[in-house]
Length: 247
Image 1 (cartoon, rainbow, N blue to C red):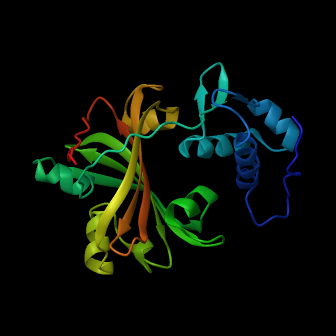
Image 2 (image 1 turned 45 degrees about the horizontal axis):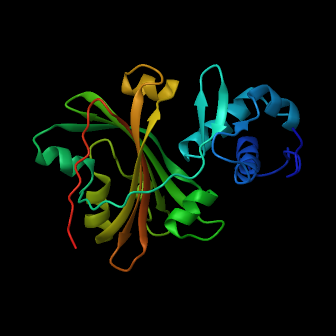
Image 3 (image 1 turned 120 degrees about the vertical axis):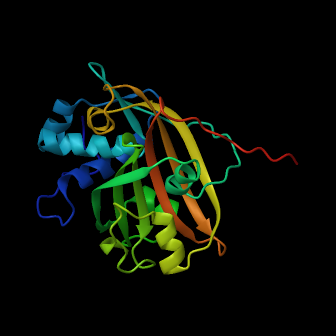
């Protein structure tokens, strides 16, 4: 495979996987749904990087919904999908489940401030170079693994938020009480996918089991983006309820 975007720079402040991911994202933009992505070995050779670097780049692209992997066959481009517009209400998983009498607990897998990538910048309406808080949690309902939730929030809007203990607190309740955030609207997409080996391990299901992938961006009453979230949820444990409003 040729490298039209230039080589991976050893002295760059950006990690090699991040550089490779950016190159592949640009390449994918010119491909069609179902087109194959070069194999791990081909990418290692073309960009002179390790297999670990390649796998991290492809894993992040898969989380962004740009590629998918079929075991034994390779990695392919997802392409653009049609969106169905639904109307729904939510106070977040914690509020939704506790109101129904379920016990919700959480394990924080990752919490820190990172440089926002292009897709995160777009979702949160940020400018290049801005940083975001990345929060990854494994959430349990009645002690059973329920979903893996990843949230991105503008770091400048929520100072010190990365120091909170999210193992016992709802993100949305903290945003409301500490930062006076007023949730006004949101956009959410839901699609089916097959879980990865790591997701299967965390959710205690078989690899490639069907899961629901939900991506949502929430806005306040000033139309400012509050947070962008990606949830990988066990499809055997959930039903999606949609409130339909006629007009």
